[in-house]
Image (cartoon, rainbow, N blue to C red; front, side):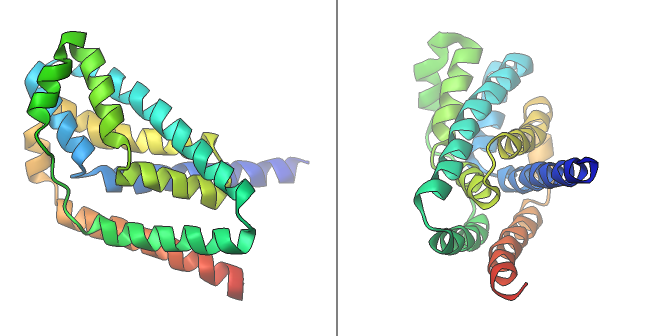
Length: 203
């Protein structure tokens, strides 16, 4: 029993750490991080901004992870294997495409009547829909058939990327080698996608 529990803990820790690292890398230079920078510059109140980002991420990624796990119940294992693997490979390509932020200033003006927390929560939640970090959360949850550990990992990854952005601002963005970070993230996504196929067919 003790060995089984130890093995399960290692599995959960692997799911958590991989989800954290992948999303932290994917979030660097992402449109939601750019939004966090813009919100920090506009409101200059980092604590309510970060709390709103945390809550928006927990809800968004919790739903995304639940969707990923649900997918495992409606798709046959063989088809799911290919869907998840191709999804990770597609994410690798997506990582190499620079993100751009649209006209978010008008959106901030629209929602700022709700206050710093309310505006940040709504804008961040909406910006995260269809974003690469949300898609990564769905894929990771489907890959590991896990909601809790993937959601916690991706949420921590988002905060690792966005907390410094909110507190330090443009100084951080200008110093980080975003292109290199994206290439590393793309390589990890590619390795997971290809590795999932190889593990199934050859190991």
